Amino acid sequence: MKKLLWIFVLLLCVSAVFARDYTKIQEKEMKKSQKYGTTTKYLNQYNDASQNNKSTYQKAGNIKTPKILIIGDYKKIEKDKYNEKISSDDEQYAQIAKRFGVRNVDNYNAQAKGEDYYKLYRIAEKIIRANKLDYLNWRVAIYRDSENPNAYNTNLNYVAISTSLYDTFVDNDDALAFVIGHEMAHSLFGHQQRREQIYRKMKKFEKDYTSIGVATYAILKRKFLIESKNAEFAADVEGLKLAAKAGYNPDNSVELLTFFDSFDSQSDYRSDHPNTAKRIENYNTAKSLIPMKEWQEWGKYNIYNSDVLKVNASSDRASFVIVGAPTKPKDQYYHPETFEEYYLRCAYAKYLNSDFSKASEYFDKYFEINSSNAPAYIYAAYANQELYKKNNDTKIKNKALEYAKKAKSIDPKNKYADSVIKEIEE
Image (tube, rainbow, N blue to C red):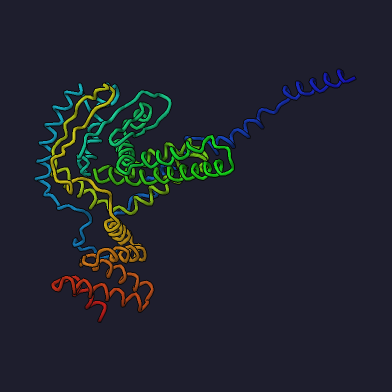
C-alpha cells in the first residue's frame, strides 16, 4: 500500500512539472529582474548621483562674494604663465611616453600594455603634484584579474588596480583618478596599520573558547568591522579631495561607486566595507563641501610650482615607480587637512550654496580655533545678514553686527566691514 502511495505522489509531481504555467514564472522573474536588474539600477544611481546632484560650487542668487577669503595655501597663477609651464611639461611627458612604448595615447581601441601604464602614470602623477605628495616614491601596478574589478593598497606607497576595473573605466579618467586617490588615502591615513593592530588582538582570542575569550573576540571583531567601514568612508572623501584638487570632475568620478552599487548585495553588518549606497551618500555630502573653483586653483598652483616627476620600471616588472622629489622643506609637502582648514572650507562652501545656517555653525567652530581672520568674519557677517532677511530675528542681526565689528577690530581699514556695519545700523 505504501509503495502504491509513493508511486501516486511521484506521478502527481511529474504531472505538476509538465503542467507548470511558464507565463507566471516569467512574470515572477520580471518582478525580480526589475528589482535586481543591474542595468536599471546602475543608470538610475548614476543619473541620481551625477545629474540630480550636480556640484553647486557657483554663487547662488545675489549673495555677496568678494574675493577676500582664501581657501587653501595658494596664489592665483596668471593664465599665460600657467600655459607656458604646461607646454614645457608636455615636452617632458612626450619623452616619457616614448619610454612606455606609446604609439598613440589617445587611441584606446587597441591599447598596448605600455599605453595602459602611461595612462595611469599621467593620472597618478598629476594627483601627486597637485597635492604635494612627491615626498616619496609612489608605486602603481595593474594586476591581471579579468573577473574582479578591484583595487588595493599596501604599505605606504603601493597602489594596484585590477585589469577588469581598469578596462571598465578606461574611458573615464575622473573615475580612475578617484580610484587612485582612494587607495593613496588609505596609505596617507595609515588605515592598514590601524586594521592590523586590531586584527592582531583578535587573533589572540580566536581560539580562546572561554566565556571571556569568546566575548572579547566578538567585541574586537565588531570593532574591526566598524574601523574598516569608517576607513572606507574616509578614503572615499580624501580620494575625492585629491582628485578634485588635480582638476578631475567629481560628477564623473562617482560613476565608479554607482557601478559597484549595481551589484552590491553585501550585508553591511558583517562586511568590512560599507554598503555602496551609503558610500554614495557620503561621497555626495563631501562633494557639496568642496568649493571647486578654489580647490582647482590650489591644485594648479601646486602643479605650477613643481616639476614633472620621473618614472622608472619597478624591479618586479609588474608596476612602475613615480620618483618623488624629496628636496623641499617638510612644510611644503602634503599634510592631512586640519580642523581649522576643514571648518573654514565647509563654512565657505555652505555659504556659496546658500545654506547660511550651516555656514554660520561652521564659522563659529572655525573661530574657536582661529579668531584673527578678518575676511572669515566678513563672510560670517554676510551669512547672518542673509539669515536675518529670512527670519527677522534681532539676535541674528546683532550676531552679524558683532562679526562685522570683529573684522573691523582686526583690520581697521577693511572697507567690507565698514559696509556691513553701515547696512546693519541703518
